[in-house]
Figure (tube, rainbow, N blue to C red):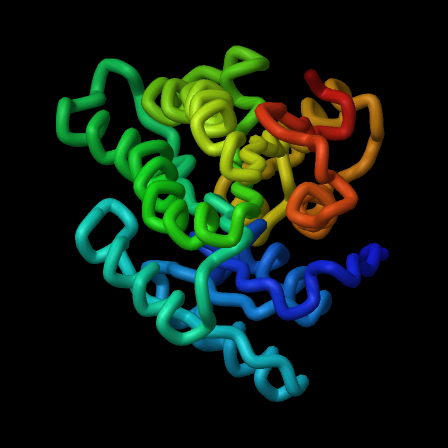
Length: 252
């Protein structure tokens, strides 16, 4: 079930990594609110499939192909979205790469790659939409973190480091952007049952661990993250900024 937020209708929303997983759920949720939705992704096939599916249902969303680690290309993609739909008033920094990596095998290049895709692009997305939000004296930016660093997840040091830094970035941007009426928050999902997680990492053993650690003894779905993001984007959360909200079924 998804609540309806009338103030989200016709708002220009940009979602990174919106072609699949949690990002897809976020795109669908804003489309249901009748927002003007654009999303950026590097994967064409699922992204075009999503555009086609929503289009067949009478809902138009805009897709821009982009490698988010290429900052000039990212800036051009965001400018293209704004030219098509108008200034972005809601930014959801969702894109990430949670590939596991053995600490002893991490190279400098791999480390830099993970920081670039999980953290660096969030800052430059926020910087790119700032002028439009400043002119409007409003806006909501939602950065996706993770509970991985809170629970001491091993086997992915570059990922957990970058995701822990999302909270620091969020609080700094909230302080800098607040005088312009712009709210900045973070959302930290737990183990959400996306297709990627189910295909790559959820085994009977890990599923048993998830259920043992969560207070809620069930699988968590992408829409449950999207629902919180809708709230934070809406005027119902008008006094919420510089905070991190956890969606993990009570694991942390």
